[in-house]
Image (cartoon, rainbow, N blue to C red; front, side, top):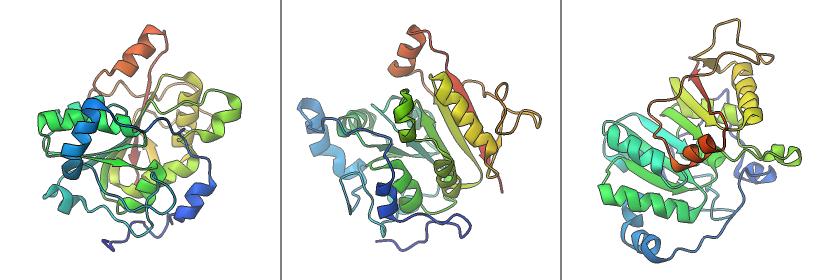
Length: 262
């Protein structure tokens, strides 16, 4: 295992066990692969899927494991991580449009990863890798501190019932994890179609001393801000079937973009 340290001294990562002491932001669904997905996994997983040593579950990351992007991709290039890559629509199109950048798709749902793998293999994309893992452990353990150009969190599970809000991915602690992974000046992009979650994300990002809201004036920034500061729709995000469904349901899409402070 690569022994490269993965966190800045000022933002110490919690242990693997500490991650599992907290509610995870996902519910495990069926993990069986069939048909084309099973075939794609058998034929292409070795080339595109990161083989992660586990400690607790099949989505955990062993504390000693490090992801060496330069070795994996065979070059030095900006690394973009998409957390919750779903069926791969966004990351595959982004990788196709940006051959000068490398992409790591993070997803816990195995059939979704297999569907992404189908798309990646069909286009023979050399600049995409996939990993089945809990996102906070990827940021804290897998990737070296300050090594990521952008982190994307598009349409995470909103956990819209009040009693389930504690399971939302975007929290102040998660903002710290994103900041630790990003290089100075790196960008954290978020999008959601749930109004309450959007405002919660905005409050968390604006309150963090580690980030600057790229769309907000000084007057807009702060935990009490409720209006303004929303980013324009990120042009690099392809219109996915999920986002189209939100539009048909009449839900507004909120985009946010934060820059990692030096």
